[in-house]
Image 1 (cartoon, rainbow, N blue to C red):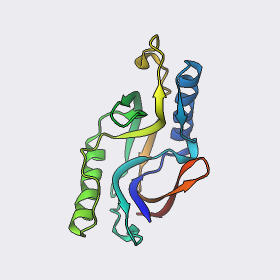
Image 2 (cartoon, rainbow, N blue to C red):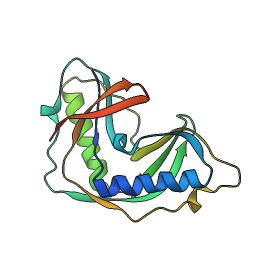
Image 3 (cartoon, rainbow, N blue to C red):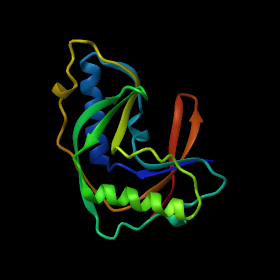
Image 4 (tube, rainbow, N blue to C red):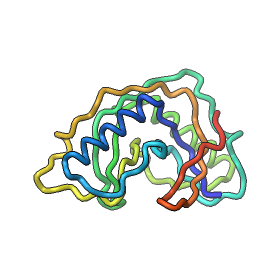
Amino acid sequence: MRLFVGLQPSQEFREALALVQDHLRASSVTGRYLDPSNLHMTLAFIGEWPEDVSELLPVVEKPFPITLSHIGIFEEADVLWGGVQPSEELRNLAKRVRHILADEGIPFDRKKINPHITLMRKPSVPGSIVLSDIGIPAATMLIDKVCLYRSDRGKNGMVYSVIGTS
């Protein structure tokens, strides 16, 4: 199984992200847009692993909010994403997830975490467009659980399914 640990956006947050995608389309930004049902925030990418590890997911003892705040591009990964305001609670949760995986001997991508939700792959932004001018709707969601996702190749790209939660 191809696995990763992440956060599942609330319906309101998902709708705000879909609205950002609509604003990008209206601004003639092209690329491979992710279906809103596939949007998520990865905390640790495990990759191929033979078993469900959802029993290892940390419990969120004190739920905390995250707020959508901006969009950006990872040039090296060819990804346009939605970002959230900096959050110490979010950083600590990601660290807890990664420590648990490391302690259990489960390999994961150890790149520094930059909390984001991928909105599109292979973006092409017209030179006249300034991403910071794209409207970002007000959206906040409460983080109260961590999810284990399975990633499967579908007809139209990857499909991400929650297979366990904390």
